[in-house]
Image (cartoon, rainbow, N blue to C red; front, top):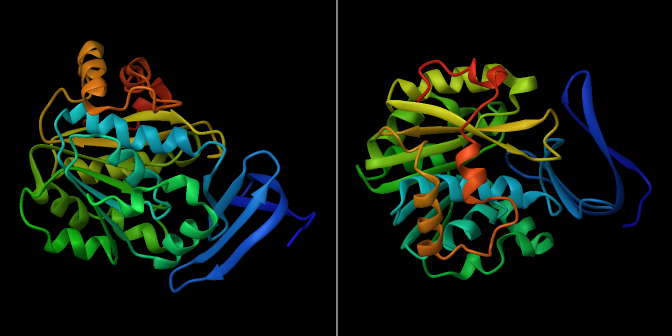
Length: 290
């Protein structure tokens, strides 16, 4: 329906943003959360979970590219990738752009997110849903990781909500311990760690938890316009040192070999390398950083 109402995002008690709604497309209460999708005037279609912006058609490429291409190219030869969350399909789509990936398992707890994304945000995932390398599971990511075989994945990408509600269990010791167990020897895990200007405890606490089980812990940044507060931090934990400092020439060569040349709008080899050089106000929240 057409409307002239505003949607206010209230992630923080004293600061937020709002969108003028052009048309509301869906409003659903799933088993886990409230889901709203609407068409905005400036950012295309927008999905909110429990009132918090998760993705917009206008700037999704920034977050999705950095959450995907950085870990896969830092690894260099990832064949088996596990995605936790990311029910809109955008991360799955970017993972499958890498020709060296032979299996991409995506585990999303809320099937309604997948259903609504397919119906109202089809361009986010594109053809990823029908790619034969994709294995999409509606289920509990914690349980999947708990049951997965040792050393069965090269890269784990965690695209969760903040550590409240349905996403809280993806920030626990048990989860990271099992991630370490199912990663291969050269494996790594990335996950969103919030906007440090407003959520610095999230980066700090998550880094401490990851460091208990995965030895080389750090973070990198991406500037996502609709994630209020400046840089979004993406946690990076690797079993081997140096994966945050792969030379730019190597990253460029890997991107060409992977087949992602010409497919990105934010990620570049230069952005990749520079994203690990953190401003001091962010770096100070990384105990035991790489």
